[in-house]
Image (cartoon, rainbow, N blue to C red):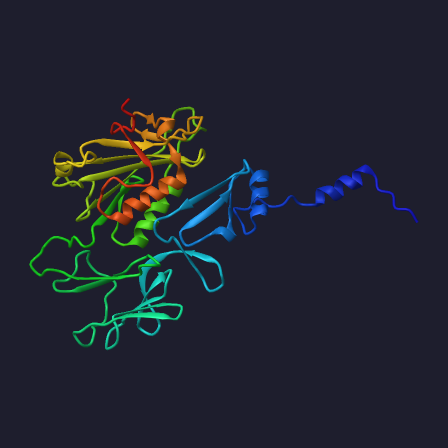
Amino acid sequence: MALVLGASTLLSIRSAVAEPACTTVEQDAAVAVDVARRCDARVEIGSARTETAQTFARPDGGFSTGESPTPRWARKPDGSWADVDVTLMPSADGSISPKVSVLPIVFSGGGMGPVALVRDSDRELALTWPGGALPEPVLSGADDLPRGAARCRSAIHRVSTSLVCGIRDPDRSERSEMTPILNVAVHGKYEYADYWGGMSALITEVVENLKSERVDMPWIDPGEQACFMFADGRHFADNRDWWPDNYLYVAVNRSTGYGGLTWMAGGERALNGSDGISDGIWVSDNASFPDFDPRVVSDPGFPLFYDPRSTVPISQVRLVLENFCSARTGDRPDGIEWVLGELNGQRVE
């Protein structure tokens, strides 16, 4: 018996074979390269992920790696990765632990025993309190610490996992300088964070959700900026009594994969700056700038856009924001080169 297939039958069979899906992560590097080329989008190589770095296959056949100065991911028991979040949460036994941490750390829920216990494989570090039984901790309340209260928080680093504790001066009315507050103006409002989990979430919000230029409009819709600032308290839009003395402006265009940054000091920091940095305005600089205009807005009101020489890959934008937040000083962050510029993001030639 002979099986005869017509052209239409063969076409139907071929059509029934679905095209491989376009994915964002592939464990195998060769597969990631193939998917990136076929789908014209970068694909993460899952097997290359570490606590601080991601590696991507690009559509052009090359590879890109983005690294963070602090851990961004922690491996779960099932082998998958989760975003680090050191927000403290109560456990069933009354102890306190971060939501997701690189190393298991447990804080006391009150009573006798160590204030904190950190484990790394077969190693263990315990911190004890000499004052007897510990009170039950409070995980919510006003921004300022109660008078005479002790405060502890977990750090995010693997090799230097640490516990930071302090006691507020009963006579001090201002917020302790131990924990400067990150103020971020984004999406037309202020957001705040004084711990790494909150800062990391704000960085992700800006990098992933900041409005980029729209090209489907009959007029120019340039997108938006965000501004990162550190201060001893929370600044509000209608507050004219004081201002932060540092400003890091950022914008991204996810459709082109680039962003731009502007840093400047204000107030006494700018007036008394003797470091050769604080008395100037600085914009991002890229020696390997793209050969096209990435259309990254530097002044939404005018509007103006960053010179292509001042645009950097979005992975570097994230790195700069992480460096800025990790330092908690408001100083001009590392991670890229800088060149003198104007507040509107334009370069001074």
